[in-house]
Length: 180
Image (cartoon, rainbow, N blue to C red):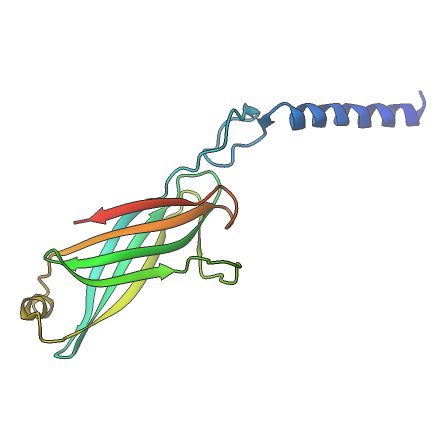
């Protein structure tokens, strides 16, 4: 048999298979939840929310003028692909009184100039830490006593913004969290 005919037949078979997959509305691999091969794409893919845990809040240093506190979050991604965590904005409370508003990362505004974001891999927890300084104004002696004695009653409320695998893919998603 002629080699050109066999080669042409192989190319035709690959072209037909490619056409069926490309135009059937199916995807080989589901980007977000790791669905089965050739699962129908009936609508837009839904990005599963990332999971937040409060890893720790520790008082690093306290003196009469200021206190240094470290907050650590454990972030887990249940999606099949990695996600880009842009920013975490949170409020730190002690005994239901807000003492600090802080953020980890940076949210892009306008032109994408910033690269201060965090890739969160699938099923691999990432620990994100933030160190904040609180100045002693003398207006809250109860807070300072709690910090010196290492007995504060912490509470954190926050919101995180993330996207699927790139800044523009998967739409912008947000998740709110609160830890007592």
